Length: 393
Image (cartoon, rainbow, N blue to C red; front, side, top):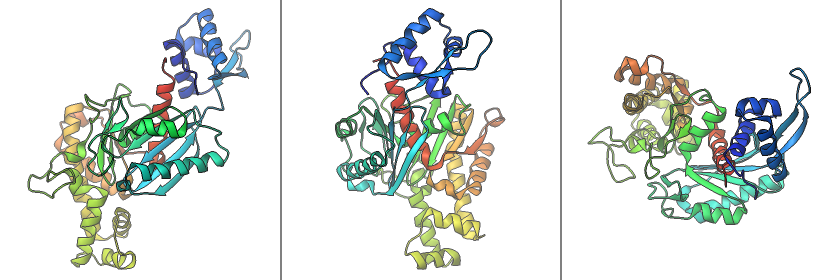
């Protein structure tokens, strides 16, 4: 896509059509608080660019029926959510409806060249399926700190070989479209803000519990990146000065004690020490354990697995309680792969937060699981690139 809105009015019109779908000229005029003549000028300019199209007549509000307007149905965005052990790639339309979605296992430690070859192959499969002839823009999430203005990962602890790699520039050349890059948890927060459980929240925290742990911070409806782009890196908040060594080089970090990989280590230790016959059986069958095994064992009533979930949730709640006291959010959303542990985990997090935080901060505070699951990151990625493209050039 070469066209961009020429001014703030056009940008706002595009975002209204993205967020609310097809509208009449009269409805857009009411929302924009523009005169009919000025609205007509801006819409005609957008129609000329092909970003929006006419869509028949809207329902009459009395008097002449107004023409319908919608975003071009041919616009296509690519959402890419790269995790430590999996990658999701999806195509959305301009209203961010997921049209096609692929998930594959990966290993981010293979380095950016190998991972992006896999991403490009997945994007090619989606394009060949007929959902998109080309991509108008792409959003990419990475499981580590990103210098947001440049789209460059910076010293990511679990991503050897990625430091300083020009992700945005390289993918833009390969895909032939504009690309934006951010931390994966920020994009998950955007996805839940746009189409998930946080649709009505203006100030909220999105806590991702997966192979790593992070937090997306949304302030007045917008992501907060911080001065250098690493706001929300809560996985490396210390919870035990004498605790385990972490991949970041410190010890006692939350991520070292209750991430997906840490939970797998604890589960295997419990299986080998004889504390859990259920986990021992699963370990013998599969040769290794994951957070999903702990979830299944807990659901089957295994006391050791339930205790691992309870203790881990309390550790997460300890950190989240501090965030709640500092930030006073209107909602806390828990997402990521470890949320397969479900309501046992959520209950433990809630209990710790409500116990540790002031009643004024938690009196009306929902702490909930995310709604979008695996699509949160790709929807957020498409939202990010559309925000960029629907801004004045």
